[in-house]
Image: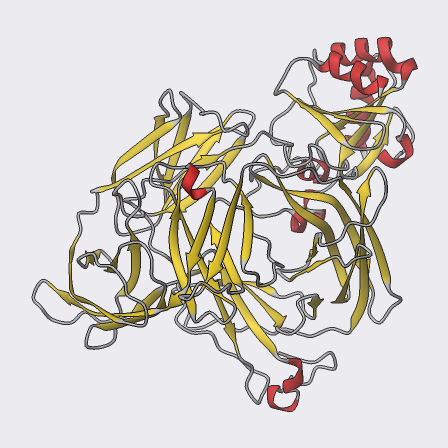
Length: 606
């Protein structure tokens, strides 16, 4: 790691900064110290893509370095990363409620670099403000929230910061908060019943990254509720006391009191069928759920590797539901007997015998639901395993079952549903809860301020921004370029004839021309203008999607290569249309429903 002047950052000389290198991947995170020469090392990584950046432990509202994404290859001996700290500029974010413009306190705010994996989070104070200190670069600023079980970004802004430079101020508008219903209340106490400040996590529940230690927490009830329940964990602020628990919706679990106790150490040994020690095996824990099934995936936060004599040790395991140890190495795997944990104890898992598993003996089962939590029934899905794939159809309740799955490698389940796009999840065999909740294209924009338009060229209208048409209802439609015409434009022409004089404005977005402008661009725009048949439709050719590729959050459907505006609105199938109200908020999207005319009348009357 280097200072802005290019010299090595030396930890021992500037220990007051308390900087660390953070290495992250799905289900994995490690903090590395910086040595006397400004270097760091993170060893023992599995192959995969890792985000490497700089974190500042005493103050989370800082971005000193944009970081890098590093692809760790099993063929390479090591990968080297050079991180350069930057001079910092103050960014003040003020959050106001919509529409009364009052300061919103205790609101989470995210500042996310578009140049790398660096993210800073904070909470607004009593005046609705939160300060960040960031290096020069381009950033996305937004308030994270949940809507119908989906993660959304409220009032996203794109800012450019120069360093050194003048302070930057940003305002975010968030809808007025409504009272939460169906909450799960959890209290933390010690063995004597005294309140203990700490932290709580629960599968499927919203986790606030800026939460402070507290002795009581409230979560909205998770929308996904499997029969075996959801696994949760709690610990005190020091991490020395903890408890794992299973939550399942019933009257008794609406209010829970968790008794935090000292952690347990689990020891054991992995051997082969010949009773010889197995070194380098990965060991983790599985939990017995309420339907007597074991969790299909081991807990990634509690893991160890066997030594040369096959021994392993899992430290700091919280008491709670019954567990068993699972060990695997390549195609070898084995499990211990199940046992209960006692606080401040040492539990002996005994010998785990690793035997060869049948490559095609695994089972994966899950349920696919839509944005309303309704089953996606009778839909074809595709399972990818390298270059091989398998097709099947969900049943009437949205469930699918995969048999004869490999047990010696990760498996990528790829779900491709019309109007929803492609969604993927990597799992392992024997996962009985490999579920998907799909949302239609554009769902992340619904209810948010309309993202800006990126255009290589405008035609049939002068260039305009969505802010310039505030006060009018905008029909934003994404279309395919077709030499044989576009029958869907007839509907848009009729809508403009009926409502254009009353405040309806139409913008048609077409593909980015990857070959650039020139004669091809002129021919395309001339042809489309003729297809408009004199209707006052503003047309644009989209810009290069690479302009906004860094803005895409994880999990967004891939394959949106038609242009930057397509990316921002998550459009992967056309035609697709959005209605933007007079305040610039996306209020309606198609082709999910067919009452476009009724929505236009409603928005014009507001």
